[in-house]
Image: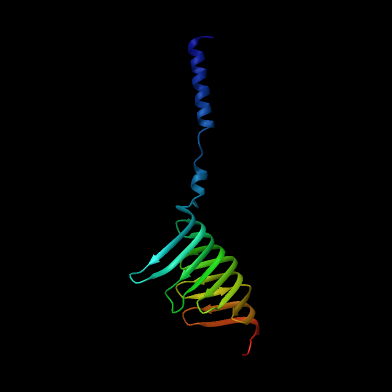
Length: 169
C-alpha cells in the first residue's frame, strides 16, 4: 500500500466522519422558549415619584420574549384605594393577564380575603376571576361558591352557587 493511498483513505475517512458527526442546529431553532432573564429569591419594586405602586416577589422568575413565569409569586398593588396582594404557587403574566395556579390567595387591607385553586387577574380591567370553587372571608363572615368575578376597581362581586355564613353582632 502506497503512502499516497493511505493518506487518501485517511482524508476520505475524516471527511465522512465530519459530515456524519456534524452538529445539528435545527433542534436549537425549534426550542425558542429559552428564558432571557432568570431570577431567584427576588423582589421587584415599581416606584412612582410619590410611592411604591407595585411589588412582585417570587422564588424563581423567568422572563421570556412574550411572557413572565414566576413560582411562589406575590403581587402587591398599592395603586387602588386599599392596598391588596395576590399570591399563587405558579403565575404566568402575558398581555396584562396574570394566570394563577395553585393556592391562589387574595388579601385586601381591610381584612377581606379569598382563596381558590386557580384563577386569572386582568390588570387592565382590574378583574379577578376564579374557575373553580372559592372561599371569601372577612372577620367572622364566610362565603363559599364557584366561578368568582371580582372587580377590584369597582369593588363588585358576582359568583355562582353561593353559600354564606354571616355573623350578627
